[in-house]
Length: 91
Image (tube, rainbow, N blue to C red; front, side, top):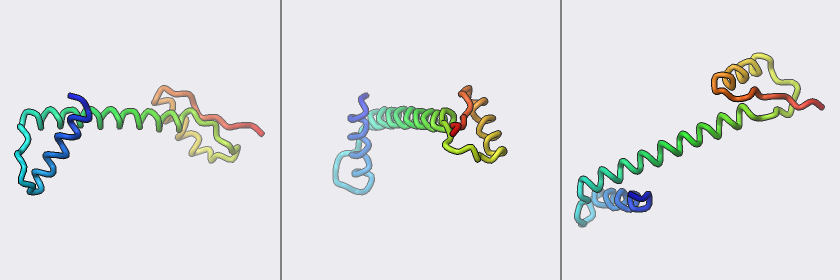
């Protein structure tokens, strides 16, 4: 099932659920639409997580005044993620 079709089914189901005088969605189609929505949302969360990890771990910090405790926490986190450690730009 395509994402657009799943979205249309879920919108229609929600309209019916709120009391509109329309035919309910076939439970099998509704289930497939829910499966597609879960798949799409799950992959989006994974992509956002990866973007966030990369933005944290692959950033060159603009300051040399990074608190040593924070720097250690960032480095530990990035090491656990298998990413390079954040670095400081030298001025």
